[in-house]
Length: 392
Ligand SMILES: Cc1cc2nc3c(=O)[nH]c(=O)nc-3n(C[C@H](O)[C@H](O)[C@H](O)COP(=O)(O)OP(=O)(O)OC[C@H]3O[C@@H](n4cnc5c(N)ncnc54)[C@H](O)[C@@H]3O)c2cc1C
Image (cartoon, rainbow, N blue to C red; front, side, top):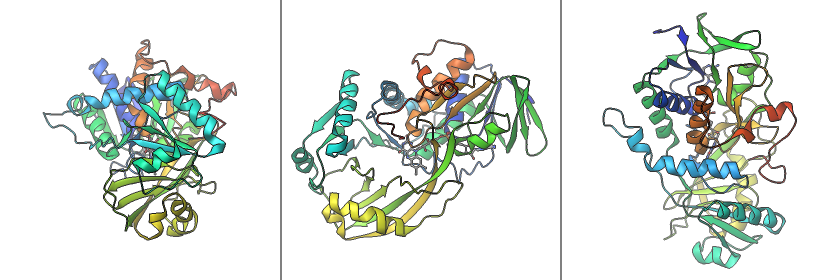
């Protein structure tokens, strides 16, 4: 190990940690930064198991602003992340996102679109007839309208993680393969981390970047977070329908979504109320057959003939308090920085979160004020919902 004392330690070496390390070292190359990851193969890492989608379509102003920054950062991402002139290929496909809504959610959807437009986002409202005219595989069954964001899209999340990791290392971060067994504290101040190997590392700042494992890790420092690991399955399907159009990521009123990978290959998933809580990665194709497929055929009748060609499961770090990110210092433990609880929408937030956390650690005024997501809202019992108490 090159150092035992660091300016900041990232506990967990996933997306938020690597992005924060990058922004820190970009701002101050002299900083000593450690990134500690228990599994550098990232086999169970949520970023790698995600769908890699980014969208402007949120209701909360700050979530929209976060995604606006993501689009800006993605424009120069390959150049910014180049190491020794090798640029990462993240394959960002701006196929658009289409959020279809039923009557019950119409008001909420229109409010979201109005907020997006007030921030200059290119999001159009479509009638059910417009939806079918653009994408003839869909029916108007149960649809009251839809919002189409043409700048939204999907990319390779593994490539984005590797890009931040490799760049942070190139800028001087120590990447350490180890399990953090505890975040240590001296009174009301963080003092570093203990590793499962028995070693200890010292730092005034520790970032909890443990993703779906964040609650257990925070508990070692006597901090209780409202975050649960919840399994989310994604099914890969092949259909007889082979449309001429490129389809957007489409979210149906039930919450089920469909992503066209290419031609007649699609991914389909939905958060269900009884998704297993815990560290369970076993897929069950019956879930698709019995729960998702009937709805899918309602919304897209040509999907009545298909085959499941694969499936995988990853973990959402569900913020059970309000479904939004928890960002910043824990008010009762100085130096414990949190980038946690992203639920189902953290991948796209890595750019703004990495920059914001770095600014907070460096004592700078944040370029984008994300204090609405401060952990103090948990202690004050003031949840910040996307709309209608929805967890996203
Ligand atoms: C199926 C699925 C689809 C998704 N789709 C999207 C999407 O389309 N768009 C979107 O924005 N978001 C999506 N998400 C959510 C997104 O993946 C997450 O919000 C985001 O990737 C979280 O990043 P993170 O850095 O917090 O966690 P991770 O990237 O999971 O990193 C946490 C890391 O910490 C390590 N770790 C944990 N504990 C320890 C320890 N004690 N010691 C050392 N290392 C430790 C883990 O091994 C892991 O590598 C999806 C998630 C899933 C599961």
